[in-house]
Image 1 (cartoon, rainbow, N blue to C red):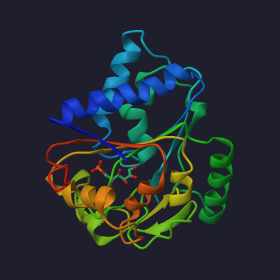
Image 2: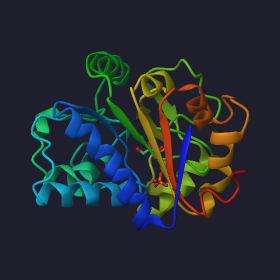
Image 3: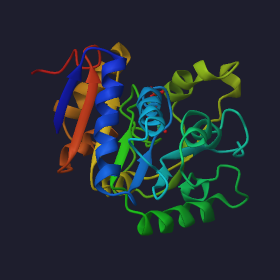
Length: 242
Ligand code: F6R
């Protein structure tokens, strides 16, 4: 795994945006696998700036997102569908019809998982953007998730609910279940970029890059992928032995 350590969130976001933008410049029909959460917001801001400066177009790009909370419909302000429109899609020239996020409010969630797997089979990610949970999760694949998993419904770990409660009025409002791409759907991407910042990611980053490859740390599976780049800040890199 290639590791790029940057000084801070600002620089991390710029470097990450350069990498993602090159994928789109090389292939205007690229399929981007996208993540939500705090880590990629700066990356998305940089992509918006490149679009506004006329350097990048998303007119023919398709996107597939990692995950969505169960129980929230796409217009709920805490849904990931809403988040993606807010932080990226509404600010670039992407066709919303080419953006895909699992539907957490579907009546039949098992069927929704099957349909998302079929979609992913036809839209292989040219690059997958990942954040990492403080417990080593990728997507919402919590520790213990099999490496061969596909899109499924997951019970969120207590630590994930606690981490994500910062974005809700109270911890009781955080959904306890989500629909997530499985680990094999993620690893299927041609290229993967992980972005991580802050001290609370240092343990997970160490286990992902230099720890044992184990389902106890889902992100450690990335050691097996031939084209992964980690872009992190010095705080998240603090435990790496360089
Ligand atoms: C988000 C996702 C999660 C986050 C991870 C880090 O779609 O799948 O794996 O990437 O929880 O979240 P932040 O970036 O908020 O620290």
